[in-house]
Amino acid sequence: MNKAEKMDLLGLRWQGMTLVELIIVIAIVSILATVAVPSMMNQIREARRSEGATHLLQLTLQQQAFRLTHLTYAKTDDLSLPSNKHFRYFVSKSSATEYVLVAEALGEQKKDSACKKMSIDQSMRKTPASCFD
Image 1 (cartoon, rainbow, N blue to C red):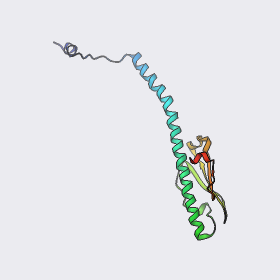
Image 2: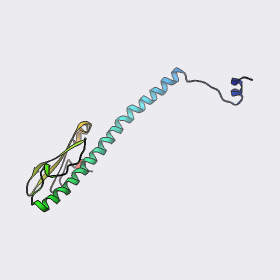
Image 3: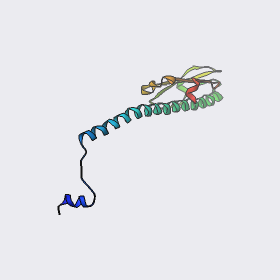
Image 4: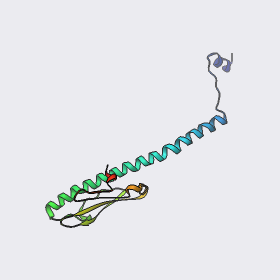
């Protein structure tokens, strides 16, 4: 009995995939990829947005601590800004009574059109508010 006959007796058969089957598998994987990749990239942008909002809130704490000792709010150079390749952080307005902290999107994060620029002030006014949810 040869090897092929033994496999037939066990109910096993060695068959390769045909070219048509391979093309169908590639088509299905391609369709899944075109649906999944944009959704995944959107989730990544939302996670980065959340990280940017969190950094702004941390900078708010730094501003309050700075004001306790200096009787004025800090300028950009006075703060320990987070190192981040997705946002640039800066103080756009600073005085003894008010400040505005800004996170401006960089690179791929600019595709997050709703939250390209987020800001928060001394009264905790968050702009745009939807970016901080």
